[in-house]
Image (tube, rainbow, N blue to C red; front, side, top):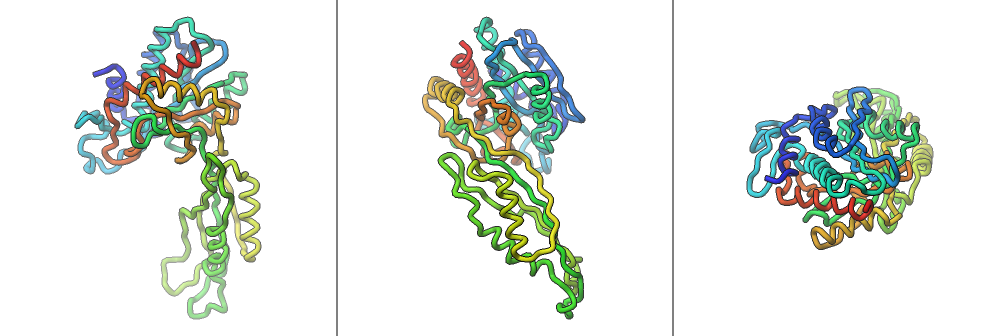
Length: 375
């Protein structure tokens, strides 16, 4: 068993369900502190945030990840206990195997080897870990970046180990992510008896044409690297549960996943214009989960592509799909952000797993990226 595979197994054994770290960060620090990495805890609330940096000069290359995992779900549905690493048919099974403890292990061993082989490297390298990426993410990387800004610490390149690959390791890298804008809409009507609709005002009927227009609206057509902005209703609730009562209000949640072709302000204004045009009485609260970002400068992207060619023999397809990641908090500071990690087919699923052979290969790719940028 290789060092990176063994570390992945050790991490899986620690039940670090959001926002718990369960000792993962102590394990990582113990691996890197002997190689000259200085440890700092930037904890906020219940969230632990680990900062391990080697060097003080720029440029600064940061490997970013999270130690927390999603809940395992029904334990009886797993073929083996979720927090017991099991090797079967060339795969390593366990909660977090793909998202993202194998990536975390690969970063850590790559950093240790790089520091040992290149003790006089230029600039600085660092590992940033949070225990609340899978949860609300209110006290994780967003707070760390605020602390860095306050003290003038600037990240130049950020490599995130989120599982980006689809069919084979390194076939896809994320060079950006769509923004996420959520709306909490309440449409008001007048409750009444279904036999006397003239004495009531059904908010479902009132809202239906507006909702149909929102769903049919072409918000933008995307661009070269982003798909068109999408609008999706995720929750809808109305009524008392009785079949003879017209409801007095309709409550729904919706979400925009938006590209760089749209802005938060434009989406809000166009949404409210549609609601107003239909004469609705409503209340709307907005929550921006993250702005879209795109790494257009090629320095980090090219280093990643060159490393992939060197280690696995092919270049990745640049992509901006998937959900949000902690990159949304780093990119606005001016850092170049790229995501490269293991296969994502089993993430958040029962019997989550990762190919064993990919774990050490990923670590070799990470090490090669450092060689490309800092030697």
